[in-house]
Image (cartoon, rainbow, N blue to C red; front, side):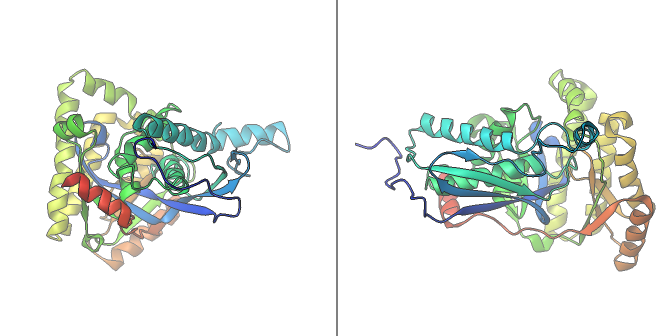
Length: 369
């Protein structure tokens, strides 16, 4: 008798098809970062940037380093130091390895049989580093999707569980994060997330509602080449929240309510309200974290947009900004010129549709039944 939830498929041959999955950058539109504070948030995946992971059946299991992001050969010590100062010490190999570990551990715990086939994993990404666009989780998410298909267990791991497993892989590496980014990247499209304590305690995940991407007005992404490290911004505020700091607790509740109000504004296409909420979201964040933590470059990105009347806020924890021009094309031109003069890049946001396939939807439907 096969173990519970076992796969009836045999190991793939070395000539089996290559599996490739893409995961996209994520923008927190409202509520961010309240996903780790039992809050609410609205996020969307964007087609502008992505990570791709490629799985090829092989005789041995191999994790292949990226020629740029996992560089270990340099022209000089100055080249090495410059690379570390701009890119950091870590590439994507550790993300691939951690994902494999978490995936295997979960399947073993749940009695999900995995065949004995091996594979090689490689990745590529064009998501700008340290921009609050969820570059690390995109690599993990794409890796996880490859493993689901290689082992043919997509129907055995519920879609609601996957974001937590992706987060667990990042936690293996000491990455500070919450569920929001991973939920957005697993589901795709435009997503409203309610991380209320009751659902989180009972199910281990929040309540997620996909919204029609056509509800969004034109949005613009502004980012810098050398932004701050987003992981450092959370620490002090998180501890103050855990300690019951009245100002932080009440402010986080207000941030969460902005997402709820934003959902209504989108459904009603009340874009003037949306602009107000976006600005309020950043103002609250600035009060909680302080200018020193946010960084002058990050603040300037927001201010550049506001000086031409556009609404703006961080996409995540800093490094990039999402902006909305309620006055239309003429304001977009002003914003574009202002960004170029300030040395910032600006792109129109291209939204990703829902990423759930038929198996995922059946899994989700049976869970919610």
